Length: 117
Image (cartoon, rainbow, N blue to C red; front, side, top):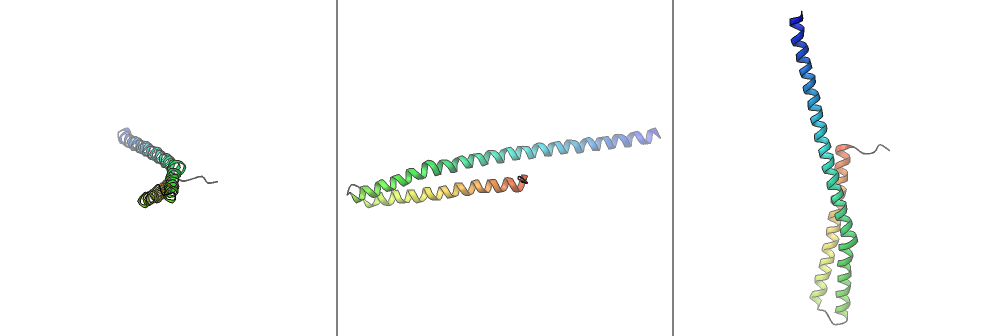
């Protein structure tokens, strides 16, 4: 009986150890994915805030200054058009960054779950 049971016990123990190792590997992989996703989310949030708080106001200010300079006869129409184009590009970049931030949030919630509150 001992010869029959010892190999079966050893095989079961090896199977259990392999399952635990696989579970730990999956846990580490998911944790790494979560940390990378959170880092991307934080980075995209910073980019969005910088665009909203710094880049867009600067572009808006330049467009206003160029328009005022044109009205005073000190700037050409092409300068105004270029400043307005840069303002529109800044607004589009702001929307793109906000969308990327929102996509990250959705991806994190769908992949890892969210608060149940």
